[in-house]
Image 1 (cartoon, one colour):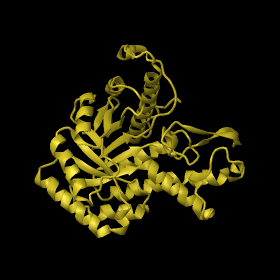
Image 2: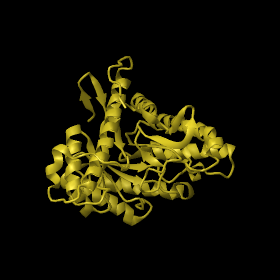
Image 3: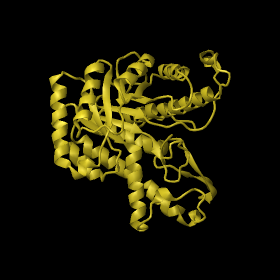
Length: 362
């Protein structure tokens, strides 16, 4: 169920990326569980095997038996082994899981009919075992959005299978496409922030960046018309970003800025694809087309370097001599929670657009 807050607004289920991603023992997961519980944020676990999920569920912070599980990126419904693993998760952990997320595959374009047949086999098996979790197929492989949208039009009748709208992935696809239209053969994501040509390219880059939100909203409207529940991966991005320790240009906070070594429009930084304003548009559009009970949002924001003193949770790391990674984890969690607040404020504003009480202070 969606959550109703004081002030008479309703917000969909909101999840956050729940992983270590920083080196250390399970005290880091205890810290994450505590911070998620304090904020009322549900976890999206990453687990490639049922054994891995079994261990992670020990740290489930809300004890509501409603988590999302992101499975390995190579799991494909086209393969019998992939379908069997999905079914195994659904059968063994159905009472805990709200949704299972799998990546889309380029074969959706090249083996479209086979992919549809495989999804129907999976649906039949999930119905047979009485599984409750949704299987959300994430936009991740860089397909033309129209191909992705067509998939869900064809499988509209499948009760368990729906879309995971990764706004960062779609936004970067659009940014790259838009830039390539005016710069044939050029990939905007291969331009670095220290490129000496950047001052002459920056306006074209930012024009392409600004085009991202419109495409995301179009995808939301198209999927929303199908009336199926939707899961969202929420994160920002920018082709010049070097923040991610995993070498990607997205999975950024919505309150990030991209530093550049010169002034552009009077500032020494660039705005990202969405920012708080773009996030508000995404949330508002989603609520308008489907309503809170058919939506779930997950903040899929990667660690950003920084340290935050442990304060009231120092006791969790009494056995650590060096608290550096604990403070790095605490900082990352603080970034997740600031973005969680943004989502809640966006829900409130969408529910009461004339209410200007909730204003985010950066």
